[in-house]
Length: 320
Image (cartoon, rainbow, N blue to C red):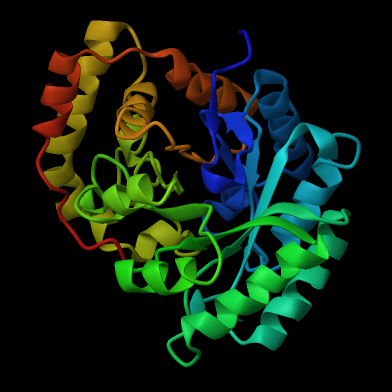
């Protein structure tokens, strides 16, 4: 497979592969018994070979183990990727996935140094505020992150799951290069206000869970997930919700069959078609899945294909 097409990553002006790689599931949240460090590292290496160059992690995945794994994988390949990590969420209890937020300037400044150490690098290309902290004005958090750009520890800064008001307040201080939020055929809300805001402000949009946490690949046929899999607590993965959401998948599978593509490729191609600075970051732990996901960048959806996908019903069940 040839190297995939590239897209500009917002006002950072960095060029990255049109499809990125989310590394969270390699050490956190999903199917713990299937984790394999050597296979995950091989997956990251295969991604780079294919031109999948936006590598996304966060300090709280694990917590901390994800950055360590990514650091190992990039030991001799750091210059080939755009490395993105995040700060702002703290894990209170690993077993129950209980989490809090810390957007204090002290946490941001300490967080980047800890992340750089775990990642084995002297800078990250994109540092993202994982969530805003309701106890800390976004201006204080964002100003601390902007300082890191000046020091050279960070190339650009972005936000995740921010509101339009928060984006406006942050952007008035320093450009919001990227916004990362959940977006897929079963989470289409960003089309209403968020993606238009990104267009207006030259901000790239990075969809996480663009495959509906695996559902839109068609591979999840049962709600019988292990108790330590995050999805087992997710309203969209109850038996009733999954049965209802099959109607969404039906549209994806119909287009996939017509194009001789996989459902996952069609779901990713739909996200790519929504804005020329969208870079989805599907997560996987397997090299063959990276190859499949990268193939979505070359999949051409016609207007008829897009119309059929747009007719898919809204998902049953809340996101969390």
